[in-house]
Image 1 (cartoon, rainbow, N blue to C red):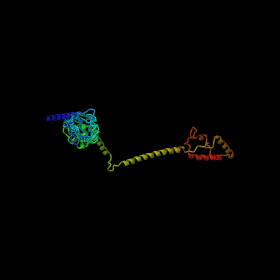
Image 2: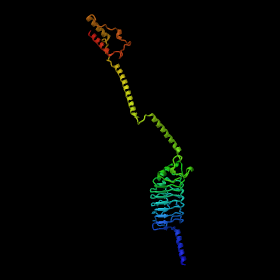
Image 3: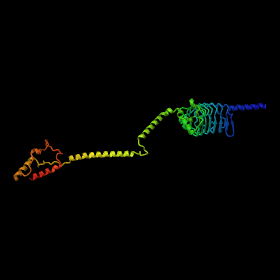
Length: 368
């Protein structure tokens, strides 16, 4: 009878544990072991101050519009491996700000929302190996400021963009082995990144002739980038030929090749000579114009002593006073008219040297 009562009590406790969801093992250090309990939801009856929780090998269902664990703000380690989570929605762990390690291995994850790890600013280890991830969102790494170890082994990644590689540069340990990497020209950023990180065992899965080859050991031609680099090589070859030709035609700069001072001197001398020739031509024209217009102005009266009437009166006075004229014979009308038929005297006709005899003749007639 007593044995039957004891069995009944144990059955009731087991049933209560199943109803409340508390079938986990606890220790005094705050570790809760709930692995392999066929749980569909996280147990809510666990103490809120636990620091480590193992929920691996269960049947957990990821909620769509709320976080997975609501009541464990002090959690440092969370193991969710081997649960069929498939898709991680936004802010699935946003209330676990103290989390340091998150294990999501072997969960069949095919997609990670860009805000899936929002709020995990203190996370240092993220394990995503053995999933079905085909691509990585660039903004996935932005909240993970303290990430130290990032495991992406055994996924379905065939390529990774340059921006994600730059963000992963700040993560000291990154594991990329076991992915079916496509080794074509688009893998060149990955190849260069692996060389900088000295990563090994990251091998190609395609094309078939590169299968099993390490990505970091390949060169650009093996990646199929020679067609894109052929044109720059041809350009460099043409530039080299041009430089060689210019070097053969120009004097060497090392041994007496400093010809530019001589060239500058020649140009300065040519310019100076041209200026002197221009100045000489200007001076010659100026001298000619100066000689043409450097004459004394013509007197108001003619060179023989005034008008013909004035000349005739003076002649009569001279004839009556002395009776005979010892002076020069007076020029006729043809002489008075001059050489020009039009009767006008040009500026250049009377030279300054001829003004002196005409002035003396005028003085002589006046004295007579």
